[in-house]
Length: 394
Image (cartoon, rainbow, N blue to C red; front, top):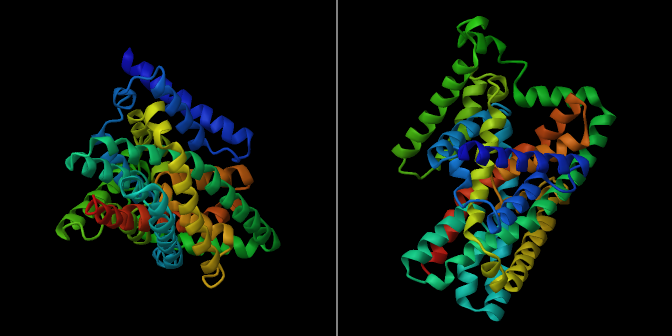
């Protein structure tokens, strides 16, 4: 019964997050609410192994991440993916702005140990927090172990509402664009997803409608994920396996091997996404009020400095790169969360802005690829390099 009780607890937290998000029209994002529930829960009544007891183990998450990223590739085409180089530039240069401010002003006021142990998490979210925690433990600097996790908690609480606000402003702007010429907007989405041109190719890879079952769809998605991880291993990790999952998902969709919106057609998307989200939030069980309180003020000031660097970089680059300032800032802010938070925040906002299916598709088509690619560039790639550099400074 304990396992079922843990699962019930997680699903109630998820529902409350979605309910609050819906009631507030995404001004309070669902992932923010869930994070607060888990944070308070781990400090009070939740068992530390709540997530594992509910069946969301590391093995499950390894499977979930790969096939979810392949699935996201079925929502866009290769041309759309390549076009997001501007989002990558803004996200990476936003990280550079953060490093400039924190390594000058931050070092001057807070000293080397605090800055070195926390700033990588500010520019790389969970991945950087995990790398820094492991590195600090190996270096025997026990007093600093809680710092990366504390920064992870603090900047998530601040960044989720900020990203949501930026996306709402961009979504409102895009709604005006859609309403001026709905026909052109629908045609653009159809062209971007390739949904109107791959039906013949999809039939080539189908065994017939009666056999096009959830199991068959998931088997094909899993095959693409396995291939992506295999290629990454052949390249000795030079290209992150998660990035390849997204790229090969796009290619497999364009070739007709995978259908549009694959995991939703297999009716498993929400199950996997919930599991991935709670596994990420499981990191909150390593904090206590005491550890957060010890460096709370310093962490908040470093976050403010980092956000200022991101904001200035995005404001400067927005116009030359043809983006609105809110969208550019949202791209820069992906460094603080990455996948799956960037996906959840974007879809939350879009679902709160419109009930029209065509309008929703147009908003997602314009915002989601930028957020996903920006997040991969920062959290999956640049954050590893930054964390490695900072670990050498310990």
